[in-house]
Length: 354
Image 1 (cartoon, rainbow, N blue to C red):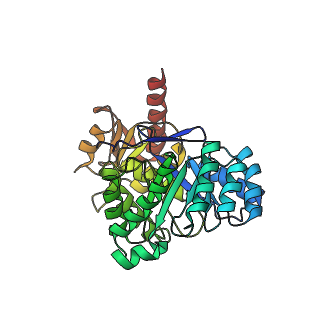
Image 2 (spheres, rainbow, N blue to C red):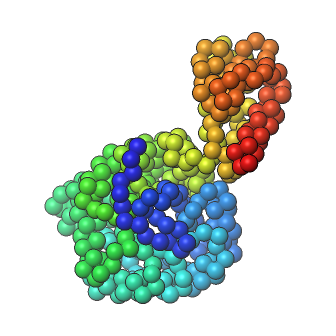
Image 3 (tube, one colour):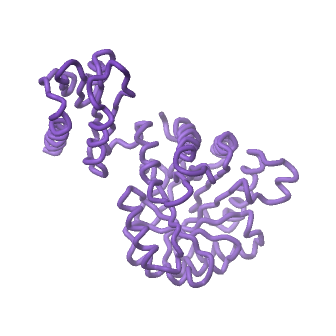
């Protein structure tokens, strides 16, 4: 697939947009005023693969806590601001790396102008976050809850920033309705050069929330649209980074993580595929391993998939057949299969580094 060309912005030490890798984000759900608890969650999200973390700033104490968070965070932080431009300014002055504003609830142009002037002075990009639940009333009355209303809300706010000479902009259009999200983002991509942040808002709990996000985000990524993303799940945010990384991995857009191909299993299966594949994923999580490993349970599709992978096994009888780079290597008993696969992965990794 071909990525859409976009302007690039700098967020902390990260490049977002342009030809930069697609970044996975998440958001804390702690009380931001509790800097210790919030920092612990930021660190855990970063360890799980979040390149950026957003925090809610809903009062002055939150804005003041940002200084300690910024100073100790392992990744750049984004301040999520609603209603109050003073909090946006305080967040910038306390070192936050990026702002997320919703044009539906900071409507006075004078307030936006003050925020933009501060962001320009400090070199802080602004994400214009349009949400279907908080669209400007006049646009809803005129266009209804449609992609046209979503896009016009974003472009209206972009025009204000551009008139002020501000171009470090990221855009996001989100709805809980997957088709509305996808159609809105596609329409915006034709009209704007700015990078897009992808997500399906209020997607739900793990399970259906993952499905909605994968369909919505995945559809856009296949179109070449998207420079950063968040899988938004109810409850703890800790599963979100992996969910986002899994979408990128499934589309071949994350080439520094192990891609495990495993069959769904049927009555022919001679291996405990889920157990073996699960152990491989668990013991290589977070490592730089740009390989494909196939764990296949029988001789129907197994040999073909195993040969196409960098390392693969196919079940059959008492032993599984091990392939490496398309060639048969040896037969391996099932009880040693996970260990031998892991050993081959480590060997291939060492050879690549050498």
